Amino acid sequence: MTRFRLAVFLLSLAIVAFLVLAVSERWRAVPIPSTPSEASSTLTALPEISPTPFLNDTQNITYVGAAVCAECHAEAYESYLRTAHSHAFGNLDPSKEPPDGTFRDAKSGRSYRVYRRSGQFRHRESIRTDDGQEIVLSDFPVRYVIGSGRFSRSYLVESDGFLLESPITWYAARQQWAISPGYDQFNPGFERSSQIRCIRCHVGRAEAVDGSPHRVRILSNAIDCERCHGPGSLHVQRWEQQTATLTTVDPTIVHPGRLSRERNEDICAQCHLHSAATVDVRGRGLASFRPGLALAEFCIHYGSKKSNKPMQVVGHVEQMRLSRCYQASKTLTCTTCHDPHQKPKPALRLAYYRSKCLGCHTEDSCGIERPQRLLKNEHDDCIACHMPTVPTEIPHFAFTHHRIAIHTSRRPAKEIGGISSLVSLGRTSHLPQVEQDRCLGLAYAQAADDQRASATFRVYVERARKLLEDVRRRGIRDAQVDAALAKLYWQRDPRKTIALSKSALEYENLPPDARVSALFTLGSTLFEMGNTDRAIRVLEKLVRLRRYSIAWFVLSRCYERAGNSPKALAAARKAVEISPQNPQFHRHLADLYRASGKSQEAEFQSRRAAALSASSSRVH
Image 1: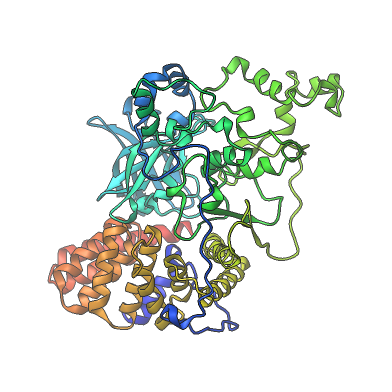
Image 2: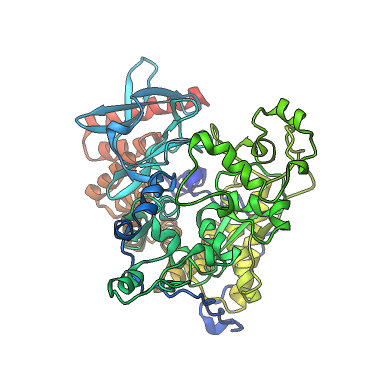
């Protein structure tokens, strides 16, 4: 494969095509200083973290686990076990999973099977050739289950220490297996590694392993006591001394009910305010956030300025804050209606939530007379009209809309008038202007990744580039900025790509996601420029941090160019293992086998490539 054909191949893959289509003839490259001394150093220090009345919000207080909490708070713990949060993530028990089944994804042409064997619960992916032969692409035992099962059950498998998302999900409403959320748009099979930033919203605690965002150590299954109350070691120590007395406020553990409304909501917003982009404040991030602190001092959430976007599964806090009820009240918040320690019994659910509405409103507040309301809903359910169950951006899902309003059955009018801007969904005024611009630039770069097929993509890319170049000239020296700019320049300006990638990798506390991004842009660019030895060193680091088929493919090409046939074959086999549905990888492996004199293996891979290509052409 020539260098030109390799570049075309890399550009064609959606996984890494973040900014390849982005730059028009209006792109004007701005020189990037290689050292801080070449920039005007106007950088203002970040403000200190705002204090709280609690003592367990610092990094040196350790976690003790929910079992320790249960020793003194048995009743609260038992009721918590009946909530959805307690079942958000867990080890898989085959006896508790839905029945075996099969289905076919018409869009990708692949078939899926869920079955049990030798005590394992397994997920299989395959295709059928023109002559009816089944080709098994992947077959994994399931490691973890995500979700309480009320709406769905999704799954994680494990390979080489990486947690991978399964393309198979159980949908409770339909009582059947189907393709996982998002896979109906682009189906990577079992190639999608689960990142720590996603897993954190389903567990009590998790941490990156060896600086990789894709190698994750689960420290506490499900969303437990300390996720909302903060680490408990100081609290346990106080009460073990047997000298403590019950006071109005125990400063050793966070009591969410005694926080301001904003900081109370921030505990929920860790996971329920996810939007178009979530950006870490420089030198901080969600991993450093503790209950009681201000979330905006650790990360900033951004959403579209347009307000009639579809319901989002994790956008509950944003929807609530758009409600007139919320804006007219000083006390309405998440926990007004949701008790994190227990959920109402099914028979009492309607009355429970209706009583929350009647805590502020009266029967006469409704603009519809009661007889008419009863014709529409026999239970006179406020929620049914003012917080209806609506479709979400994820197929097969319908959740309660958390914007309390007068909803109609009509779809929102089609939006016209150009491309929306990103705006912060929380306060940013506490940050210096250069930090605000940095966060907004990173948000545009992040949000562009979801807009590759639209005109919004090019606009967001240009906004990101201008903002990030500008904050760098103003003195920002930050790994995430450098890694993002390297990605913006990737396949456009090799010199800047290499300089920025190397700069990002020199930071001591480089965030895991920025590290893998910088390693890929650097390694692939070095390969394209013919610097094989350096590319090998970089890509070997990358594949230890990310299960990435393209990285293994490029690494195989590097080894081939360097004359190391055994390593070239091993890397090519790894690319095929990770992305078995990709015919290009099978062709490359066939070429290597053929060059090594292994004609039988080469023929097998050639036939596999042909079958996969035929399958792809049938469904496209």
